[in-house]
Image 1: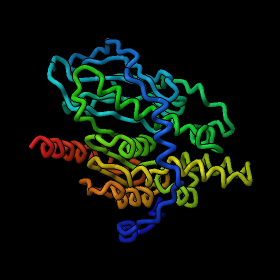
Image 2: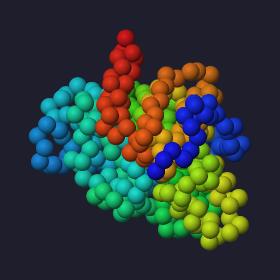
Image 3: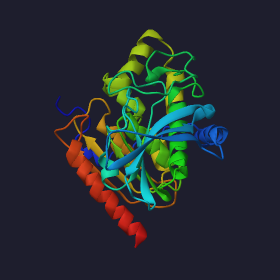
Amino acid sequence: MPAFDLPLDQLERHRPEPDEPADFDAFWQTTLKSAAHPEPLIGADRIETGLTLVESWDVTFRGFGGDPVHAWYTRPADTPELLPGIVEFAGYGRGRGLPHERLTWVNAGYAHLLMDNRGQGDQYGNGGATPDPHAHAAGGPGPAVRGLLDPHDFHYRRLITDAVGAVAALRALPGTDPERVAAVGNSQGGGVALAVAGLVPDLAAALVTAPLLCGIRRALDLTDDGPYGEIAAYLAVHRGAEEAAYRTLSYVEGISFARRARAPLHLGVGLRDTVCPPSGAYAAYHRYGELTGEAPEREIHAYPFNGHEGGDAVHVRRQLAWLRGVRAARSA
């Protein structure tokens, strides 16, 4: 697929006007307040994985509506000191899978929490374990359109609330330094990590790749791939529902979360990405932190000949080096 979005020189100047509802902040404050709990953890059970260099736990924490949300917690074995933490959010249609699948961050010396996606896990990977008991409002079968006609019913309201709860859960787990917790995600996970950066003011860092939910209206005009294609297919059947759908989507717009973020940001994007068009990532990048009165550290890496895979392992290597630098700067 050749490049289909704006050329790089225009992406580097792409700063569209915010399209957000007047009650965006009140909506999320009310949502998170209703989900807050003084004890975010429900349980953490040590499990045997067959691996000798890491230790893993099956974690359950409180998410949206107090619902139990599952996660894997993994840290280097025989490491008693407090470690910086990583909360990782998985891609669209994927669950937490198996505890030995994602070991990059733990092998880099982090305490790692991989959150399950409620009501997902059946499209690829190795499944999930968290149902979505609230998925009963009008909308299509896919997560991107569940409850699409009302922001209070929308799937991503619940998933993002779970993600904020995952940060609280990791901070409450033994062996994690609560002041050094970063959010990491790719695709849907990248959009969720960006939302967390906008909702958790003391996050240590955000590492976001190919984020979904950024520049949503433009993405719907550009592509029928992936989750945006599910939304377009739903609106092709439910003619006249566009206004309600756009209103709902405006409450989960990544650019709006980015404007409120304070944590240092590392962002990666493939310029041939038809799943999450790069203009959305650039718009979030250019408006990152603008409402905070600060200028958070940030950098973006573009991969001109890559699609949704972006920089892949090359980009992960950059993430590891960048986060080491952020940690060193904070401790200096």
